[in-house]
Image (cartoon, rainbow, N blue to C red; front, top):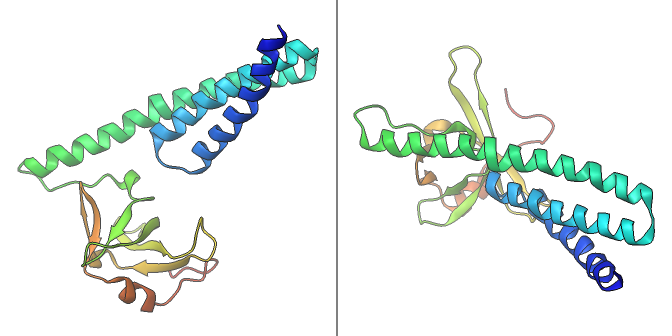
Amino acid sequence: MDALADAAGWIAPAATMIAAMMTAANLGARVTGWGFIVFTVGSLGWSAVALASGQANLLWTNAFLTLVNAVGIWRWLGRQARYDDGGRAAMVRSAAARVPTLFAVGSLAGAKVVGRDGAALGVVVEAMMRCKGATLAYVVVSEGGVGGVGERLHALEPGELRFSQDGVTCDLTPDDLRDRSILDEKAWPI
């Protein structure tokens, strides 16, 4: 039992830290879903530590977290992954059909924006739509910084961007984007 408790004492914190990084990175439904699977390994490990050490509070906490993790797995590897797959399939089918080509709006946030020279310019962080007429008003692109620290936000007109199953492209260069006015994080244009 001591060997199992020792192993659980190492596995539980490692799995918890790895899972936290996976879910915090927001790299898509599947990575987030697998993060919840790793969280489950961690909560089961913590439960083993709790049983070996007689810590009822740790056991009950991690029993509850195991249930929460099951919901996360269902949400991200089940439901959200199906939505993402459906949107991607519609984009692919529309590109080959005699209908207007489609772009899954749900995949817009987090999409890389590639410039004229093929270099990544930034990442779409939001898109604003006009309520009247249901048209896209502007797309907010983040460039620079690391993990959100030091990033600069820019509003790009929808007409400047091209949307396809391969992502978002435009005719700007990195210098062109840097020269654009920076959005105030608390007062975006209307």
